[in-house]
Each structure stands twice: as structure tokens, then as C-alpha cells.
Length: 414
Image 1 (spheres, rainbow, N blue to C red):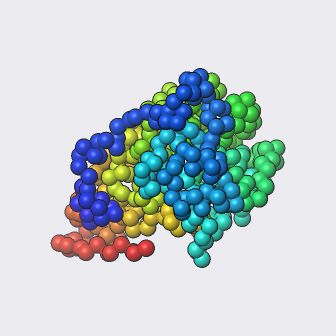
Image 2 (cartoon, rainbow, N blue to C red; image 1 turned 90 degrees about the vertical axis):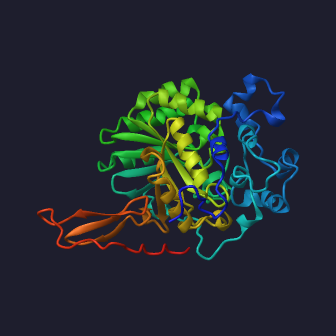
Image 3 (cartoon, helix red, strand yellow; image 1 turned 60 degrees about the horizontal axis):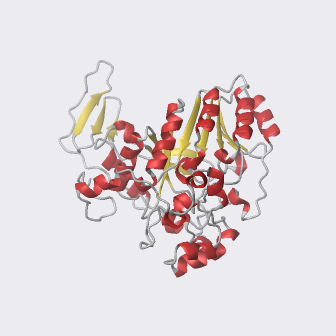
């Protein structure tokens, strides 16, 4: 097990001042858009209208574009559209081609290369879709896809086959059929709205959809999955929050991968959602050179709590076609979890999961804390590597003494 202050990728651990700087909140600023009036800059529709969507725009605003990025951007619209909001673009470091923000949204030629084990539908959603736009993979809950559009496009998107329609998937949600299916299946108590991004719908359209779902007696609560609070915090208006609070219990899963994404604008937007009584959880994806580092992840989860967001899931990157250059190893993920558990508050520790390829669902992946377990006892290892015993015998008395030392099995190499 690595020391607490070591980095999961073998680099020298940062100093306390470097760690603390990761946790500071800064504004994204205006950058190339410094002359834009506040009224426009803070208008989410202006941000969408002025997204960077072509290689020519990308070259203009990012003259340090590498040949790999230029080629990727030219091919982007054959796999997954290129789109970056002006606000989020300002977080990119133009001097660093491995900038953790840049890696997430700027295409690379590597996206055109598909490894033998990669798939267009890596978690088997299409095979669990009883009606268009609805995925019923778990017994008591469904995924309700509302749109194929996002404010900006993550280059590791699990639904790149569908999102942005660059591949010709021709996604057309049919709300009437989706809602009718939910109403006809009383075992469904939990509906997750996703896509694309549900918060791209107008307030009126979203309210109509939520009200129809909320009226189904056996639906106990609703969830919204959205990247918009980090890509487009301007969308989180007081009017939107006032509308959403009508539909409690309503939860929201947001998506942030690196502490730099948590700006003052994002913190304020998340605060508006929290003030509206919406419980917030964060879903991160483990990505190479973005957050495959225990220090970066620790700063992210602690900073999320400062934004009143519970770190919920850390996903192993799905086996989506063309994503090999962004995938970190499972071994790194387990090592990061070892550096979080016991080394920071439990509220800050997400569940590390692999969405089993082909539709197996989310499988928790954890370091080995249970070293042995039989009818008499459980032998445990804590975060410090110390060994403890918990009795399993009926009368609470173990039948044998625990060994002085137990060698932990070597983690599987990936």
C-alpha cells in the first residue's frame, strides 16, 4: 500500500500548497469574450449560440492546437460532435496539451481508432430498451432519455453513438410511449432523466415532463443527470430552481472530473440547486492524465463537499469505441480508493464502479479490506494496513486466533 501522500501514478507528491491551490475557487473569466456585455455572457442561450463547433474556430481560439487535435477536430462530426461553451473553454490551458480540461472536450485523432474490445454500446443499453428512449436494466428503475443534445461534448461519452447524432443514430424520444411504459409497470419507483442533457430543455418543456412523471402513483422519486452545472452554470437560473423544487423528492447527479472545473460560477450554481432542496451527487469518470491521481481526486471530492455535493460514483471509463487513449487502469482506480478511504471524511469517498460490459450493470470495485471470512470470523484490514478480527461464531467467540500477519493478495494488473 502506498503512503498517504504518494501519487497513484508514481509521480512525486505535490506540496501542501499545490494541493491547497487545487481546492481554491476561481472564476473562469472571460478570455476572448472580455467585450461581451454581462447580460449576454450570463445568458445560457447566448453561451449555447456561441459555442465552438468547428476546427476553424478551435484554431482561432487555441492556436496551440496539436496536429493530433487538428486531425481529430476535422473528423469529430463523424463520431461525436465538437461543441464547447465559451465559459468552459476559458478553463483550458493553451500552453499544456495535457491540460485536464482540454483532454475532456477537444477531439484527438485517437478517437478514430477502435480497439478490439471496444463497443458502440458498451453497457448494453439498446438491448434493455423496451420502447425508444427508455432503458429498463434494473428491476425498480428506468433510464429516461430525453434528448441527444448536450451543452458540450465529452470525448469519452458512453452514448457517443446517440449523443449529437453524428453517427446517424437518429434518436427521437417518444415521451408518450416512454411514460405509458412507466405507468404500466408498477415495479418502477425511480426514474432517471438523462440523454443528452435534460437541462437543455426549456423550463416549460421540462416542467411538463416532470409533472407527467410525478403524477404516476408508483413513481416515488425522480432524478436528473446533468453535466450542465459544470459546462453551463448560467443555465441554473432562479426560475429553473423554483420550477424544479415543485417536484420533490427530486435528486440531481452532476458530473465533474477535475477540481479546476469547480469555479466560483459552478459553486454558485450548485448552491442555487441545493438551496432549492435538491440533493446533489457527483459522478466522475476515471480518466488518464485528468484525475488518475490520488491528490487530484482528493482535492476534487473535498471541493465537491464545499459545494454541497456528495461524491457519488467514480466510474471506470466504459469501453466506448475510440476511448483507449483516455482510459486509466482499474489498478490505478483501486489505488486511488485506498488513498481516499480513511484519509478523508467518509462523505467524500465515492463508490468506485465498473459498468459491466454488455449490460451487466454497475459492479462495485474496492481494495481488499476483507482478508478472510469463514464460519468463525472475519479478518479485516483497515486503511492503515492493520489487521483486526470480527467474530462470526454464534456465541461471538472465535474458535481460533488470527494470524499475526496476512499477506494482502497483489492487485490484478490491468
